Amino acid sequence: MRCSILIKWLFVSAFALPVVAQVQQTQRFEANVVRGGHPFEVASLQERGLLLHRVTWNAVGNEYEVIKLDTTFKQIWSGYIPLNPAFSISHKKSYKSKLYILSHSRNFRDFNIIEIDDETGKYAQWDLQNYIPFVPSEFEVTDRAVIIGGYYNYTPIVVLFDFETLMIRIL
Image (cartoon, rainbow, N blue to C red; front, side, top):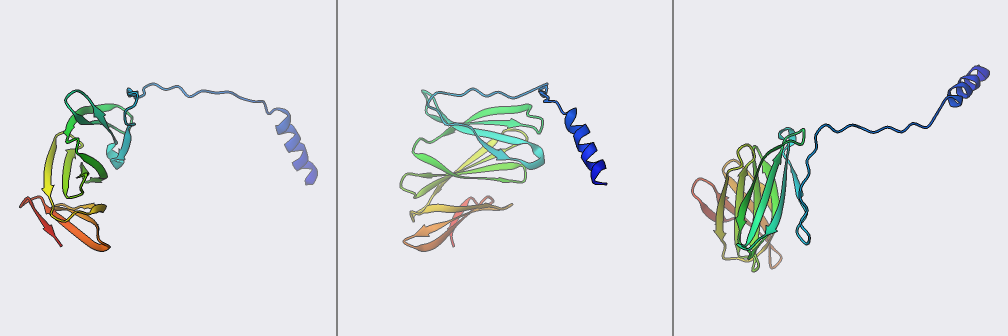
């Protein structure tokens, strides 16, 4: 039995040749890279594809570039969303067929929420004026509201923004 295994191994190794192969790409997606600009970040939309997004600068101001790719990396739509240059993006969350982006001001009092519909590319923005400055560490989205959590002087704080009433509440 040992002899037959040894013979099989010698036979297979005698005909093993190095092989070089290349996968043929029928389509691919290429994005322009801007010198000194932000790289693209990727948000998974699960079975609906991907959203590529980055902050860009132009003569008018900051813009948020968004590109929707399906699961075969085919571009579905792309667009730009104007951004307030005094705000920094801190969190992103995909919920159902929308991507939510949370940004905060430099003093951490005011927040901005952008909702992007990943099917159509349409978006909505809400400016939230908060009276307690805190660094957001948590960001959750539900059907009716956005929940932002963080700490103020080592005390946990939770802010809820209701989509129906467009009111902000500190919990």
